[in-house]
Length: 176
Figure (spheres, rainbow, N blue to C red):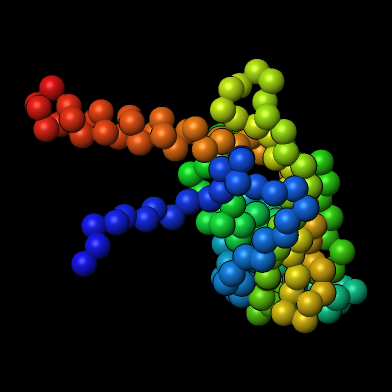
């Protein structure tokens, strides 16, 4: 039996390759409950998300999944592969679009391309990455696209975090 421990994490800035595309798995099937809860919690009272009878008379003939839920899920699908524990924080979005709607029962699949990365001039050990996230439904139709920038740690943060954890463990063992 091995004593090796492997922690799940995203990629460090220096591990990200401009032009590389990451396909995220698994996908996420969106339920009526997901949509209703998100819509209610976010105080978005748009009838298009909540009122089945009214929505039936509108162009799509049924309720649509809240686009902000689609966006949040699209970004969320990328976290474990790209940014879990390796991000400083989200900086913003420069583009968000929803070329097709999502409906209850649709499954969202995501992929991300690294468009750009650069070291920070003012924050050593950190840098800015530009991600292009794309979401597709189960039929392969593009339903969401978002370009966002995030501040990411480089791999020097891993050794600093490990040293801090070791120092904490030493203090615990010695009772300090």
